[in-house]
Image (cartoon, rainbow, N blue to C red; front, side, top):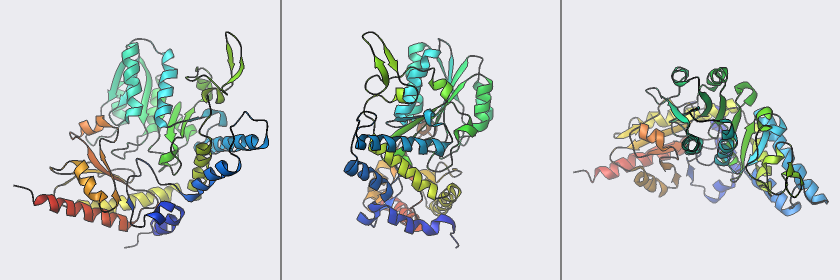
Length: 409
């Protein structure tokens, strides 16, 4: 079998990830939760801590200037990476932080009975802020019906829009089902109806090239740790015109130009949204992760994932009592269960073999309830995974099924 593509390079790519040196038997299949970290990211962060460990925008000395310069270079890399302006990129703590900030800042433009549209595929961080805002402001929270496979469709979006529709909060790629949302057409329809669109791109950014200009979204959020970067750093993109109309959530150090007894003059965007000492090393590490990803080819990344996905599906489908929920996933994610076995029990057995998968509702309880299950086992593939990983994983599934068959009455 000619496996081709980036697959043949996965083992060589592993040399860039020190965790494999420390755990040579590791089968890491929890990439949708957190990706592994390459040495280049660790080196850039350590360089900051060992050579110019200083706060930014404050010190009038060389190390502070250096730290500020590297921090802003990271912002420039992010902007280029998603095709935005530099001042449209805000550093946050996470995707969750970004999405909560958008909701909190934008809700001042909403009034009772305005419609907010979401989906059952959303991560909790995309839907819960709007649940709270809807109760607080008496908004109408509407869910786009999913099709029979659990996908978001343009047709179903059209069905729920009313003349009161103001906000669409929507995922780019589902973290449970691995479906890519047809965003370009949906966003155009939303804008034709005078809605703003907030995109959760946390699961999209590691797998497909994200272009905010092409999408024409109003806001977009993602996290560093899902794209080979460090934890504790997220991105909120917002269109310049909209960002200028928003009041910051946080007030304090470095977001202001001048403070008087009874008023404050805040800095221009994006710095007015970054109060306090930011995650400097983490931002620099995110910039390094972008450098690494840009050395690769996104088409090859996705092609590699799809090959592993198909290879795993072919093998899993032959195992009795395995229920697969998303055989047509668009990225390398398989959500499944073993009949009559709680997903936590199965994953615990996998862990004994150093096989790391996610088990539970994946911070997306609405879609697991839609699937009529308490949770799923999720295996998610990325650039450093191999066919051997899949073989070990499938063997673990088969052995787990056989083990629990012994206890059937």
